[in-house]
Image (cartoon, rainbow, N blue to C red):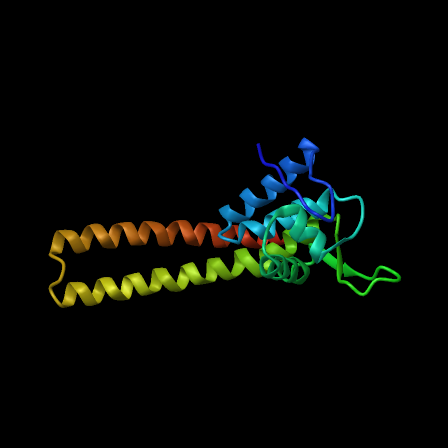
Length: 171
């Protein structure tokens, strides 16, 4: 079982909080993002109030650099915000509870750029295939199999992109 301890804050003992931290971590890993970014969001999502960077580091057992990078990413997506705590000079963060903001931010900053990068890669694969076939690096049958499979991926990608306007309206 996951246990998180801190010298400045008590360990996370509530199973619901541990599960939320892990759920955030898994989601970020699936999106190709740092695990710590998801952990931070999960921690803040069920936190009772704002947490300092030191609190986050201590509770999650991550480096200050990872916490800083994760909070910057989450802030840029609109998933968390920096808040001022009277009488304290530290940076504090709290979750923006509207998951729609997180989804919109993730879409604009993660999903959409990755789809664009995938299109560039597919175009590059087709160019490489043409080059390799012209140079005789692939025989006719190999080139045909490669072309069919790359075109299949391109069709899937086009279908996904054609659904994006609907997805954008939903978020």
